[in-house]
Every structure is written in structure tokens, then in C-alpha cells.
Image 1 (cartoon, one colour):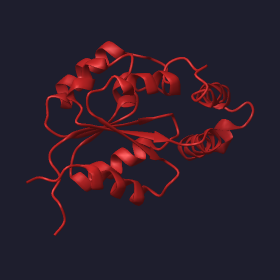
Image 2: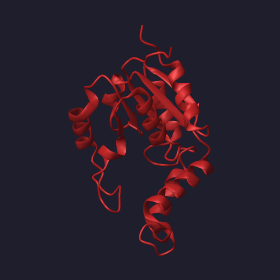
Image 3: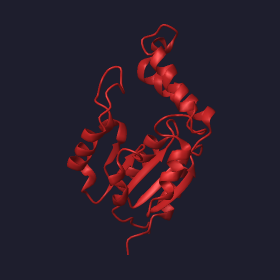
Image 4: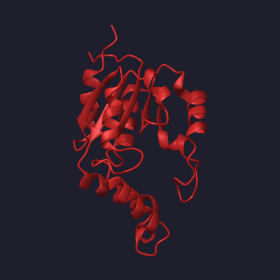
Length: 187
């Protein structure tokens, strides 16, 4: 008989392109829990995306919609703008993926979302996306503002909940199993 997992609040975090959203969705499905992404709260929905940053409003929306509930899976980074969420966490998954693979994933994600012409030189998303890729490329060395490896690693060390570092290059099913295997079962 398969173990039943407790209600819990899980954060899946790591660099952009590490697969945080994908793993969070898969975990939420496996746990029959709602899933949320920090970007959906942190930025006003605009086209082009990610133009209007709203951390104070994001926290208020998160409080109203899910933070008080007993179970959810959240993907993205919360260090530095949503530290009040940290004490609510029951478990954190920290995804690590080599930079080149992350950048290729980001390129593919952008191609699927906006089409190759939007990213081609002179395309309407080309300049913004190249700036974003340059930012994402500096996650590991700490030169990127906002979310970066040294900053995230230091923040993770302050948490009182369990943090599990996983290899985000593995298949999603394998990652879900790896996480579910360490979540405590209900008595």
C-alpha cells in the first residue's frame, strides 16, 4: 500500500530555468494539492511580461488566496521579498541545474511561448529576452541582482524546515518520487 502524505506546504526553488515550476506542478498533482507560482503574484500580468513588479501586493494576494491553507506547493524564489512565508513552510526543494542547460531550457520556453520570430534579431521580444538570459547566466556566480546562488544558499541556511537539494537534470517522475520518498507518511 502506498504511503499517504500529510498536508504540507512545499516551496520548490532554484535558478530560473531549473525546472521549479515543472516540478512544483508535478508534486502538486501527486499530492492533490494546489500549486502557485511566485511570478503570478510578484508581477502584474502584462504583455510583454514581467514589466511591473509588485512585491507588497503579491504578499497580500498570497495571504488572501492560499498562505493560510494547510497544503500548497509554491514555485519560485521568495527570499528577500516574502520572508514572512518562510515560517509557514514544511519542506523546501532546491533544484540545481548547470547554467548551460538552464539557458537552453529558457530559450526553448521562450520559443514555445512567443515563437522564434519574436526572439530573432529585431523581434519584439529579442532585446528583453537577451537581457533576461544575461541575468540568468549570472545566477551561479552571484553577479545577478535578485535571485542568485550565493544569496539563495545563504537564505536556505536560515530556514528551520528541511531543505532537500536535488539534481534538476533528472527526469521529472524521478524527482517527484525522490521528494515523495522523504516526505513523512501520515500515521
